[in-house]
Image (cartoon, rainbow, N blue to C red; front, side, top):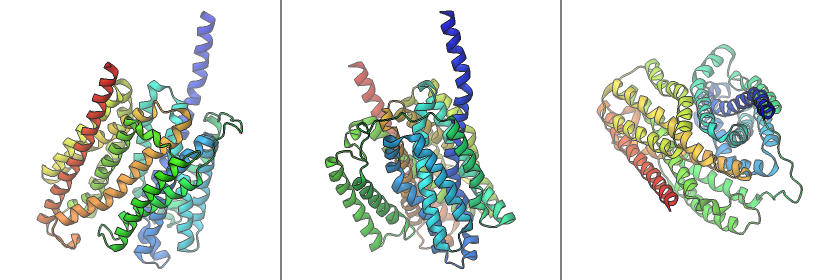
Length: 475
């Protein structure tokens, strides 16, 4: 008996460093896609000047990346479930790294946009499969901590992008904002290759076919929705309505195709899992609110409170800094408490913060609200992801992880468009940049009244799910 215990202790001791290195590779796989999003935004003015292009044209550099992630993240998650997640993650890291090189040396704007789309494909693979790997890397009791760590790395990438990008452009020029990904990509590839668990080999009879028709339908549907929400800058014209209608019809065609597919991209029966359906809906609602802070806050801080650009940047950095600090503790709290309880607690904090954002005046009120909103968001994310991924079948982890990331992205896209439109409408001015301070403050209050209502809807969903679980447990 003692020898068995000793052997187990030795095995755990040998495994622990490997687990840490595996988590390091997954952390970098989450950092790079978020860094790729935020670092490019700060370079748009320089890129417009370098390529002598209109601002609307260089915006395609950001849009191509986000569209690739949004439209492909579920499909690559499913492909990882079929072909092997480790193999596909390594391909995704390699694609992201090579595309970063192409971005840095691109001689024309349109080649840069094409390279960014390929980089987005690599990012989609990394984002979808990184979360799926958590179940194979850590024990179920440590899932919350791992999810909190990934949330922290995503926040670091988002926060680091603008400042790092500004320094790189000032010192080395715009290609450096893409080439900085190359050494990080190489390090991520080496760590993942050496420390992630090997794929379980499957015989040919066990391999399921990939749903090409469903993939194309979903990609076209999501593209139509994303474009409907982004073009026109929140003002809906005939083209936006046409694209939104196409997205609605696309959903219908997709459901019809999946119901008849031999090996569907998304098994429609997963939506009978009310925990998953509720988690996806809450994820989208919460992401919509978080995007509202990024869309509305710069105008409120500069136009209503009269801060200069430097101070706006400092105040706007408070949220990401709190995200970095609170991510890992939020994950550990989820491990100690029940994940559904963490979801409810996080949403309660976010609801209180949204109300505070609407009613508390001045810069101190804004900072106090952000200090509640951001930890609440990190707690919600860690708990929600843990609640979903902890009990997912191994052959479904990739696609479910992709769906979680997709719901988040759709929420961000919707938030940028819809909440931006609510802010502009409630400010009662056609040009938000020329609005009076009182109008901006009024728009801020109404926008976060709407945000609080969205969080309350998410909270009702969470409470309903908890009550249903308890009722099923008692019966």
